[in-house]
Length: 317
Ligand code: AKB
Image 1: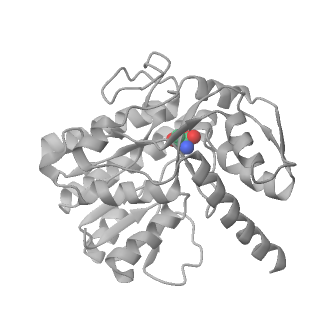
Image 2: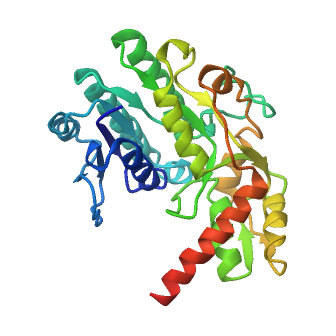
């Protein structure tokens, strides 16, 4: 990875990944692109709608990119509300990014998700290779995406790599339209209101990961020796599995007056119920030495500390 182009760079993962990649590979060697134009004060930035394959190609070629990190996609709850848009954006964008990578001989990364599993998948210690019959449009997109990435590797030799991300927790950029978003919202509400109403039912376990571990995983996978990768698209990874009341209890250790109630959203609850409780990550550990630093306790302490500073700065600015 010497010259990297990132799509969806202003999203939850992209906004932090750009900073990390620039700190490792150099500011001028990472091209951030997004459909929205926001002030990117430093470093190369271009507006890109990923359904426009020609512009994607032109930007990658002009930049001299050797790596594509394709992040632009709708998340699960939004995709469920607008399945046709999700198909067109998630699959159309992915096909364009794979084609550009094939034409320009680029290494390729795109995230899959725990959403690639469905109700018939084993829920506990979900194996790397198992039944994938998701019941959501997002899940259909993710399974098709994993297969497409394998196809481009086997058929055209494109060096495609991917992970199945769990819910990602971060204090920098909030997620939008996901099922696991409650695990981020809860921190904002805990600090600002002292209480939170969870749209996910007590007892619903989902895998989660703190953003610094997620970013490191992307870099580690992309830098891994290609000959050691058996799976490529896409590796199960996770750092913790919890249900809402466990997260609330952990927050309460720092904010003793914090309380939580429930008002379940049937759409997001049904999605969560169809996903695994906890993933088996042995393939990632074995094939590219996947590891994490943050468990529930450490992530919670860091989130609260960093978010308090961020919200305080916002309040006085
Ligand atoms: C979502 O909830 O849609 C995402 C995911 C797990 O893919 N965070």
